[in-house]
Length: 379
Ligand code: COS
Image 1 (cartoon, rainbow, N blue to C red):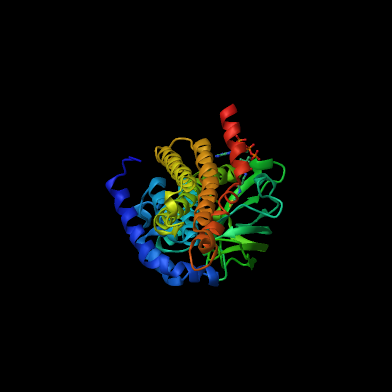
Image 2 (image 1 turned 90 degrees about the vertical axis):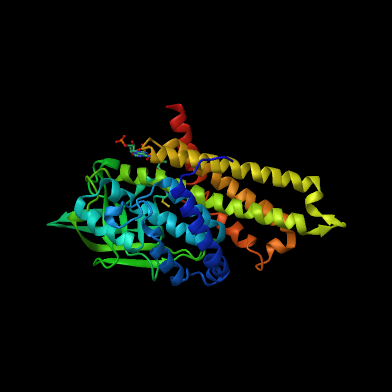
């Protein structure tokens, strides 16, 4: 499809495509099996500036927009969805600080992230999954510190070796509902903060996802992001942008799956002809190609809308919902076309199929996206 990408967008795509081909593709199967990202990969991405794609240059970042972030995530996801996830979450997790944080917070945390510190975003709790407003974690002011108690679960970018700081959502005024929630930055070494178990997952196995515990955890009040009581809005706003990154992750998987399926269908012979000569299989390919193009168009629309500074709640939810669903469908059909080979670990499709399956779940399930789309459409 004929999108007009800027020179900067073309060049970041070329750079990341080459990195993904040369460095990620050969390492991805081992990282999946060992359930760990190669530290060398993280180091290389830090050097390329990918930890701070959206961070302004004055804080040491690349100063790019969501469109560029989408391109980076898409290209990484073609070869390793766990790596794409790290970058997608990283470049969403600092957004509340960037948009609403004090100059002191920006100097401290944006500079760190741009230099390669891994950051996370902690909303989910055992009682607050889709119902994000049902959090229980509290933060009580004691002098110039917060005393935080509670727990978070399924937190990406936090693991035994990863995760330098995390922006959490906590209740600071229990009588004010969502207007009593505050966003607070917690350093990994904050007293009273600890990591629970690292989750064992179906897919994106190399990506860290962990439980977080706060037991009388002490954090300076100056780590408040923006205004107390506005945290829920900041988190929802960050998720709007984050969902475009997750949609790009699904798109990257789908694009790669389609390419693998096409190559295989043209070369695999059965009944004395390439299987691509069968009309039934051609119709699979036609559906896959249509879905990939439609997802790309939605993501492009969402990302450019975001970068123009307009409200993206609806278009981001549409892009995430659609791309997440077709990511699974396209990976599934590509696996079917590869048949027995697709099911074997020698080929990347079984990993891609497992990796694609998370996207309709995290950063808001497909059902939550539909709630948002319906609410916005019925307004
Ligand atoms: N941007 C900014 N503010 C937003 C917003 C957005 N996208 N969406 C909602 N808000 C604000 C509302 O404007 C409202 O504030 P005001 O009262 O000041 O107007 C406040 O937040 C409450 O909004 P709402 O009543 O819509 O909240 P709900 O509890 O009904 O929650 C959904 C709605 C479903 C959208 C929310 O719970 C959600 O996104 N859930 C999924 C969570 C998720 O994605 N989890 C994944 C975790 S990260 S892996």
